[in-house]
Length: 464
Ligand SMILES: Nc1nc2c(ncn2[C@@H]2O[C@H](COP(=O)(O)OP(=O)(O)OP(=O)(O)O)[C@@H](O)[C@H]2O)c(=O)[nH]1
Ligand SMILES: [Mg+2]
Image (cartoon, rainbow, N blue to C red):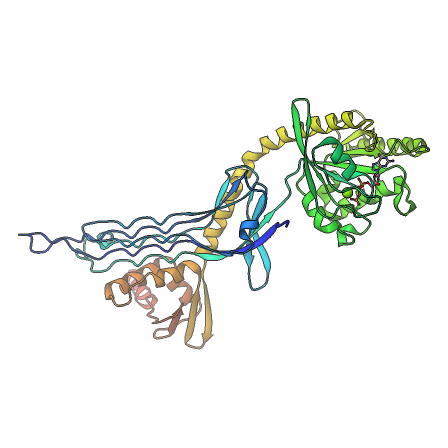
């Protein structure tokens, strides 16, 4: 089975609770606070592993959870950190946010293109702080500690994209499978009927010191970008190959087509699927030169390929063009011209890889950008007015602060009030029109609103 896209539910480990405790020693009547912190929960990490070639491990198991942190203890003993959960995926896996309800994917979290590259997809919760942290000049003996932070959870999508260096594209029966079987050890089915190939085949080709991975993908037809034929599924795989090897059948065999027309149709389909595919580095191959009577159309195609190459270089014949100006004439049947083509692909792929390596540094910052945005979203909250005197505050961080509070403990509640005020919840409620005594709901809790503005206004007036 060719598993290439799965949705999984991941949850970080919850943070352990902080401890409320006071030192007990002989001859010391009242010891200071000594409650240790709870351990942080483990993170859920997705990591690329070159030894894997599919997402089959995620086919039947969809829920993954990292270990929780343990609770803090007295005598300043901290809880242990929960173990991270590392989910291994093949190199070439794209990780995205996923909404299970709407079935829509959200922001891209990471594109894991190197062996060992990893990204934290769900951070574990922070451990709650022990009561030693809450000592102030006026509060010598804080009789409360924080509960552990509940971990974040959610769905993510893993998508494996074929990691080939060169993709053989072309009309059905153009000879793509015949060609890959000539240049590599791959042995795909070859048939004189269209759509012989139903799934991509990969093959490793070696030429001198260089090697590359070629993908033989199912034939494309007009309308492939809209899902006609088998095309669309596979255009997705071509998306990330560095080089497109466009195989044209000089005999126009299937449905009696014109090879030049075929060439245009495939170029158009690539462009319609994605603009960048139209400008992707490309090599054009004229296949089946062993068939008599193909010379004339081959010359015409060669002229077109050269003209397209010049056009792609902005009309300058001597400038670098993403399209090879040369038409590679081969017979995948007899092997004529195949070695030369293989060498040309190998060199081109080598150059493109070097260029890609230089760009990887920029890629590295990408994970960081996502993490940054996630944190910003996490800190955001909204005030919703449910009725005249009832408001609700929603937002991941605000909600976690509430859940981390031990409501049986008055001091802990006072501390929560102080925190909410500090991050601007009071101000936002005030702006939304909340008055003294209004009900404020956060997760499952209801609070009475106490405006502090009145007192502050009076204070300012006095100063004036
Ligand atoms: N005469 C001749 N026939 C060829 C050549 N290359 C391939 N063929 C024949 O063309 C037919 C199609 O070849 P395939 O390699 O299966 O073509 P494909 O592009 O993989 O086709 P799909 O998988 O259907 O997209 C087969 O009958 C091959 O034997 C060639 O260079 N010369
Ligand atoms: Mg084929």
